[in-house]
Image (tube, rainbow, N blue to C red; front, side, top):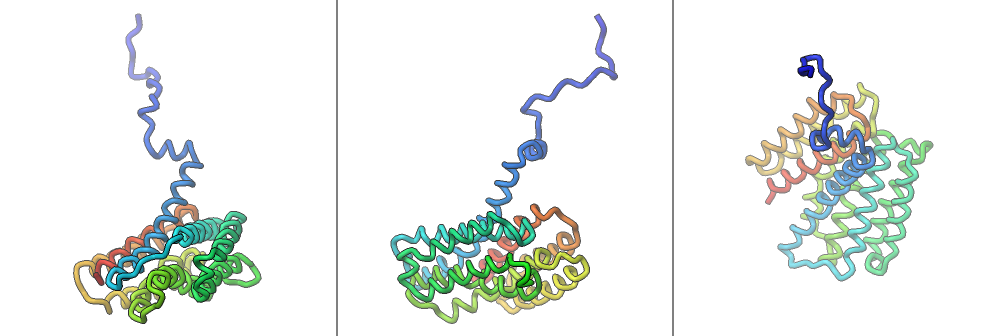
Length: 263
């Protein structure tokens, strides 16, 4: 009987020996689903945390049937994921935009005309964002999305809770606008040189906005995240499918740190 030598063929791996990376490579559908979940959770954490916690001081409560607004926010987050991961043209994004538009006609949202118009405007903007001749894959398109994404759903939630909106709450959402401007630059400006310059300028503006808030340990952590993301991520050429959930996850982390800074 021959003894095994160093040249013997290695034993075949058992399923338990397959690592996570190999599993992801073997199941692209699971990988895609994971990336989508990260985007949807990231955006909804941002949109719902501010108004729900802020309204605790005002004894506000969401009306019955608020699941309609939850459905809208999930559909919009899905549309945003497919818009950016497909480089601004996706059948699935159009489908989710259409479904979100239908949701705005629910009795809950139609009962508040201002909320109805605001949500419908956001949906329409995401649709025209994918129309090439509109040329919104630019700094102008980025500014429009940042404003609508930062204000639309949080203001809708706050208004349905309290039947009014305070100027103080609107001001607390300004850092959220800067976070969208900063973290979505690589998606709107794919050109490496223009992307680098724009992300630097908007990153500095974002840092100034953060430093204008009360300074504490959370402030320092937010500054580190923003600076670190520019030095490492915005100078790397990553696959677009990984960029989208990664930037949204970093945005959520930064925004939550800013929220802790203010509360």
